[in-house]
Length: 372
Image 1: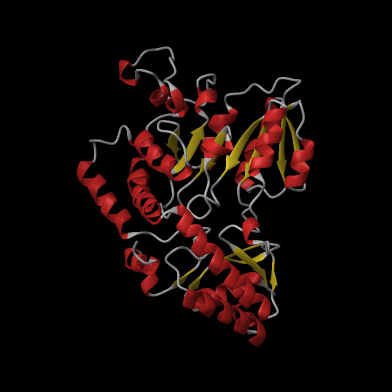
Image 2: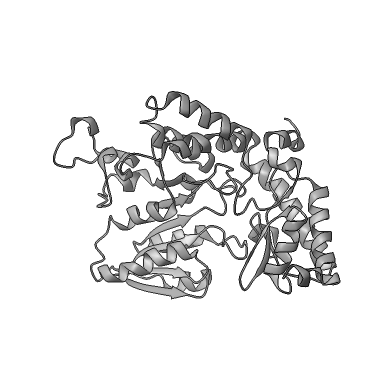
């Protein structure tokens, strides 16, 4: 098996940066540009099935059976398609989720109040478990929280929801490609995600998995001609396609799908279990170095509860981020929590040590004040 460092030449940006923003924007592989050129040459040929064929490629990474995963523009669209399957009629009209969910998803679910949904927002995953009851219809939950990098107890939430007849929509955007996920073993109903982060696939390639046993009984109202059983018959009435294809809409974002496949291929080749092992070791090193420098780490200390991201609290995180960027250390920050660092399989221990040392020096010297 090739050493992980041998993959570095697949990512040109590593030549001149310390790239630690993979939790937000994964480095672009060379193959993405090559695939886009291939699309430009093909243009009008061979792309009709990309929503399904690329969905199957992604499905192999998440343990999904063939033809159960479809591609969409982004997670908001994928979640909206899920929501369009339901009427939110009492008594089962509750949506329960935690405060830590990503804003885009929160906005969408809060908007369902206009359609009769009772939306309950609780502090954390433990409170979600307590809040799920026989009136609950949907439980949207992040596999990994975007602000802290904490892995949530998705298995416990799925079990509890199914006990009372509720369904779970798992947002795996912050985990797939760095934290193993087997949707078949988990038994989760819906899973959404995208390609921008750990999958190194770029924007515009979101995806939706629907549990096969559930899919056949649902009819999304957010739909389109690709979801028809015979789309090129151009029939005036809708006849839903079988399986996950019924969750498609109109013409897909074809260039984005061509680009995304290059990242999927690399993640498949390296293997998520191997990526996770590397990630746990490097994030533990980051935690150790940052705490040794007297900084507060916000992410969980327990490696089993920590995703691929380490979040560290600093004075004026936006100013610290700007100074890091000036030193070609690519990361980001989030309000109220601090600097986020996400090493991936191609990052070296030397890069991790360098970034931690630079953060400590910027804070200790006050260099961030100049950046501010």
